[in-house]
Amino acid sequence: MDLFVLNRACPTQTLIKEGAAIIQRSWLLGVGFLLGLSTIGMADDLAPIVPAPDYAPASASCPPASAPTYTMTNVDCVTTSGGSNKLLGLIAPSDHGFDNFISPMTNPIYFEDPRTLTETRFIFANQGIPSSLGGGNAQVMAMQVRAALTENLSIIATKDGFIFPENPLLSDGFLDVNAGLKYNLYKNYANQSLVSTGFTFGAPVGSHQSLQGKGNGELNMFLSGGQQIGDNWHVLSTFGARIPANNNAYSESTYFSNHLDRKLGKSGFYLFTEANWYHWLSNGNQFPAPVEGGDLFNLGSTNVLGHDIVTGAYGVKYKPNGNLEIGLAYEIPYTDRRDLLQNRLTADLIIRF
Image (cartoon, rainbow, N blue to C red; front, side, top):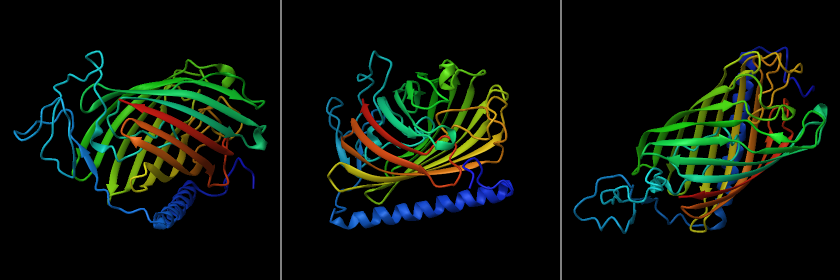
C-alpha cells in the first residue's frame, strides 16, 4: 500500500473509526503487556505518597514550614513555605503533590504533563524516515523549560533545539521555538487526579533548510489530565489543536495523546505504553506531496485533509526521587500511513526543582 495514503477511497468517518480501533487495540496490548510484567513479584505495598503542597494552609498540628513533611495518603496536615523557596523571588517549586506520576515521552512538543512544574528537560531523538521520502535518519537535540509562577500557573517552553538529518529533503538547522502558558484547572491530592489547560505559540524562527521558519507561526491549544489508579498505575491524556496563523504556510490538525504506566514497587522504575492520534483538518499549499510532519514539522502540505496517523510506543523510566527522571521510548506508526515517521527512539533527562 502506498505509504502516503491509508485509503483514499475511504471517507473521513471511516478513517477516524479505523484510527480509533487501532488505538483501542494498541491500548489493550499495552495493558496486557504491563499486567504481565506486574506479575514478577513487585508488591503493591506502597500507598500513594502525597507531599504537602507548598501553598496549602497549615493546620495547628503541622510541623514548622522549614521542614516539609510527606504523609501516606494523609492530606489533612500540610505545610507551607510562605514563598521562601522561590528562585529569584519569582519561580516557584514544582507541585510535588503528584510525585508518583511520570511525564510522557512521545509527541514531546505537544503531549503536555498536566502538573505545575519547574524543570529542565533534555531530549534526544533519532527518527527514521521512510524510504519513499528519501530514507535515512534525523537526530534532534532539544531542551524544554517549565517554570511555575504560582500554585496553578506556569510558563512552558516546549520546542527548540537543533536537527541533524541524513535525508535529501532536510539539512542541518535550528527548530522553531514554541512557548506559552499552562493553568491547572482542578487538582485532588487525595484522589491523585488533576486537569490543566494551556496554549503555546510556535514562532517561525527556525532554519528554512530544516523545513522550519515558515509563515506567521501557529497556535497550539490543549487540555491535559492525569489520574492515578490504585497505588501504582497512572493515566495521562492530552487533546489539542494546532491552528496556523497562515493557512497557506501550514496545515491545521488535532491530536490525542495517551499514556499508561505502572510503577514497579519501590524500585523507582516505571514501564509505560503510549499512543498518539493525529488528524488533519485542512491543507496548506507549501509542500506538494500529500504527507505531513507529525509533531516535529508542519510542512503545509496539500491533500492531507482528513488524513490520520496513529503511533504507539513502549518504554521505561527511572525516577529515583521527585527531582529526577530518566526515560527511553521506542515509537512506530500503527497505521499504514507513516508520512515522515518510520520509527523513533527518544531519550530524555528531567531535572526538576
